[in-house]
Length: 84
Image: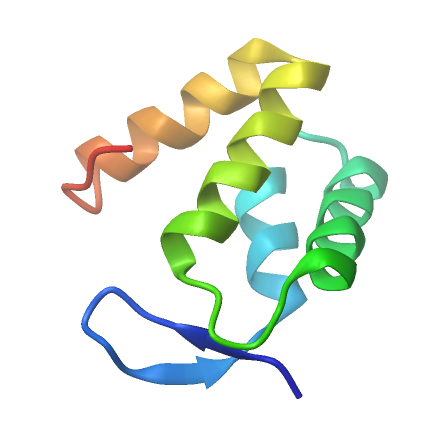
């Protein structure tokens, strides 16, 4: 099991479904959202940060459709009060 380091320093198991749900909410079709999650899961090592994972996800979204990446960023800044 791969453990991810959260912003506050806690560690928790990597959950690909979180990426899938967020990517779909950003506008990506479910099959592409699953592809992103699978790619991230294969390349993520123990101790990776949520920031590193987010950066990879945003890059994949942007490469396929820049609007999906913008949707994710807008949601993060408006609802979660985060910046990229």
